[in-house]
Length: 304
Image (cartoon, rainbow, N blue to C red; front, side):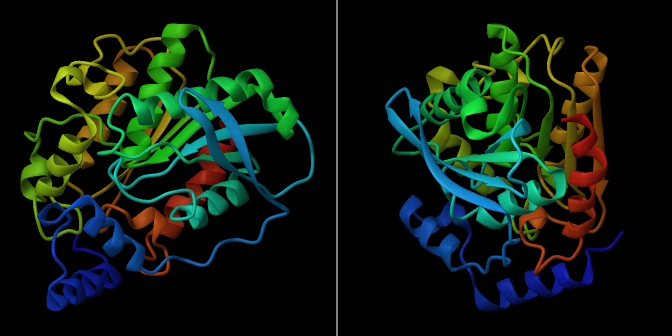
């Protein structure tokens, strides 16, 4: 189907403004441009609290979100997107709020270290440290340590998939995975990567630029960095994957769901037609996101 009307208008405006591609500048320039983009207003919640959790290189800042004062809430460790280079807890505040509002979970958004200053394994290790800590100490935050899930969008979904693999390997029983347009493979051969290589917000060149900042050559075979390198996908937490029709990453996300199911790990997937990468977090610009948010309540909430 054609690109949604509001998305087409946004893409045309970006082209007319001559906004440079992410991959044409430095990480600092990309961060500056990212911060200029409008963000949706966040949901009002009962609880929003900044905390710190011990990590491999010092304390890791986290922000807690819940729409209840109750204890024993299911917990979601949330890892923000931005190509491992951009964004932060603050940059993804609106999406973390929406996830908490629609799932009823205690969402723990993680300020992991960013590339290229801190390439893999640093971002992964931070996300793993928080997830493992929640499984042991989450009750102190008002959560249920026996119900810990992971979620993320784009690069955050990559981190969530890597943490899920490590959890299986280290015997930590996760409840669920929500992977929003995940990037799981650095190989750019799938049809969606070719057909949507440019003109739809995220480009193939941008993804190559992000991967090069995130994963040094010596780690390109590590499935915690590039989950598609994993040969065994059995025994992982069940997953739900959301993809966008005009996203270069569409096919790898849908292929990941197929591989999970083939390995006996239950996985569902929804492709949102007419949408582009990033739509779930930008609902004031891309109204198609609202259907994805409905799935937070309809698909994710019953499983966490």
